[in-house]
Amino acid sequence: MDRPQSPTPEEMMPRPAAIFLLAPIVAVGIVFVLYAYLFWHGYVGRSASGETVEMRFEGCAPSRDVVEARAVEMGLGSPRLEGGEGSRYTLTAVLPDEPEALSAIPETLATRGLMELHGGGEVLLTNADLVSSSVRLDITMSPTTLLVLTLDGAKTVAKHMNTYPDDRMDYFLDGEKIHDQSNRKPFSELELEIPPSAENDRARMGLAAHRGIIMGLPLPCEVSLLGVEVAEGMP
Image 1: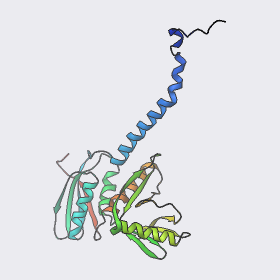
Image 2: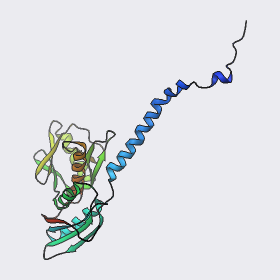
Image 3: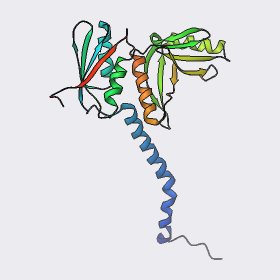
Image 4: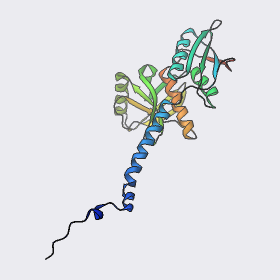
């Protein structure tokens, strides 16, 4: 009986069609690279390379430091705060090169940002119970405003959810209800998330970032935006 012959080197060479077997593996790698790219640019954003503007505000003295801190947190270029007459002051900074930046950023800087979580007829959390607030993107690139709670704040929320499992909690921002969630929703670690409700992905990202800034750095008083002007003689 003839023994089976070993394949020749030529027969062992992969055929051209075999390249298609690698397509799923290559596709998965490409998808993860693209997600990493989108996550980085979506979370970090673009550098401030637009117009230099002067934003004029009016508010209490402590609000100056918060406005300046927000500008730094948002990554505005070369922010410089100058005092004006009485309660008026001016922030000069370079904005991102985006069409909506000229209106959206000054509005964010001047929004109060008082957050409350209500449940069972009482206030469970305020800004004082937050360690930080920021934007979180999931694997589908959907943004939410991420609230990281203090240990005491997390214990308060967990106790309420366990005591009233059939109720709901309501999120308020500057007196307006922006979200609610079931007490049966899993609550892990020290985090809560507020999904933004907007008409498209770009608007949802902007709203999530806006809320993350103002909740993490709330203003101590009402601040009025008096005007925004492009700084003459500056890039």
